Length: 255
Image (cartoon, rainbow, N blue to C red; front, side, top):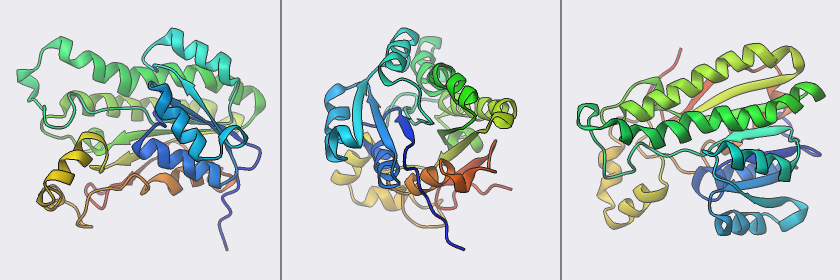
């Protein structure tokens, strides 16, 4: 039996699609036949990705700060309804290289992480899921982190936000499954993106150190989760919902 990942005729939105994992997910969806709205807070990044994927025929950029309910409303007006939503936008609490123990943080340090890693998932999903329910078909995939599954030092707030997103997706899946809409999470380990990728470029030995806890002795690459996301968004994923799938090199096993 072969698995056919065919998304022809489907319309998708990927938040944070302007770089890293988001860009690879956009590419995987386009290769499967979907039209993709590439969201990013930086219009030039979204436009560059959309152009690389074939321009208006296959992908278009849509600038929006997904921590702003008003800007999400405007994004929804620009894109119209979609069949597939990938909540990918997210960032660690303080960024690589500026991690703090919870006791050393202040409440104002928590706000950005909670708004982007949990609040944005709620607001963006709320803007799009209603139309999926009405049409009787939809796919929602939210990118989360092993910091929320396992718990990590220096990542208590980030992990709390990602764990909250997982709980939300499980509850949402229970509500919308009868309407042909599935909702799942893909949980990532440490990925070679952003500031970490820059640090690895100047210190090649750093990856060996960071990869020691991983069964597969390397860090994640942005394309590692992309095909799984596309599969979950296809008809092959029609009976898969409310789940959290690790793509983490064996870092944190699941039952």
